[in-house]
Length: 344
Image (cartoon, rainbow, N blue to C red; front, side, top):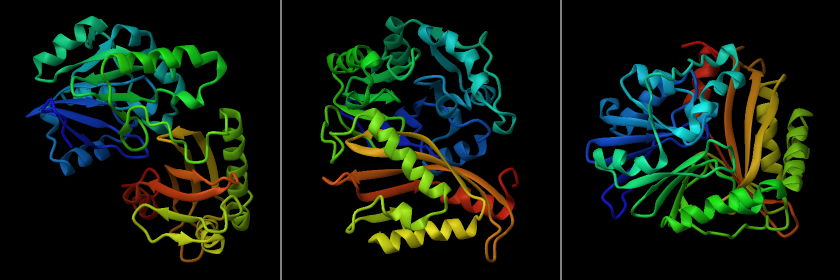
């Protein structure tokens, strides 16, 4: 896709997180920087989208959480300078606190970053042919920033949807979204989920649900999976609902949805589902999860898997799921089935 400013935008994301490449010809900026320990996956996605790593002039993290800046140091080691806003400096060392040894996270050094103030961002971007600026948009985290191009494209990371903010954060989040509007943002490129027009407020049945209610819904749905209750999972859907996973055929109706759930439960008798988050995005409810289990079911490989994804729920007036679009990295899932989590 391309904007009126001439910039082109492609998504090289995986594991339910978007990593956006903004290009002005062969001069490119990578917005959000991969999961730790997945440099091979990011390289493969860049190749698939015909983006040479050598043409990326800077990497920019919208905030320093492991799903948005996990590869920052490895990208630096591969020749991609890290562009850091001064409001983000203190957040970088905190990354280590949220990682485990199996994440294979590489600590980000701080002495060799390109650290700038927000009012310097336009000049830095202009020097690589990209017209826009970086602005401070706290709400999801204090170090959150957004890239706003002059054509109205806004890369917002995990900036909280206005309808999902708690009372304590409402003023901060509202001010961040207002700043984006003031800077001319017309289309949002979020950290998770599809791009959407700025100001799209339709909530597809979810307007009556506050953040606490959505979390409770997600927790009960997760519990049904962890109780290995396939019919209980399907009961969260209304009678005419469907579940479509990636590019597969939709499973229509509760019985078919229960069959899909039972298939995973049978293949992974020790399966555990972890709810990573549940929130509104482009009006739908996004339920993000991590699946952990060992493929010891019938004809199983015996290998352990751990993979993440998300479902986009449209809720009906009855509060039940009217449709669900599931997303996860099937290539990574199949690799783990064959070789295990850490195999190759």
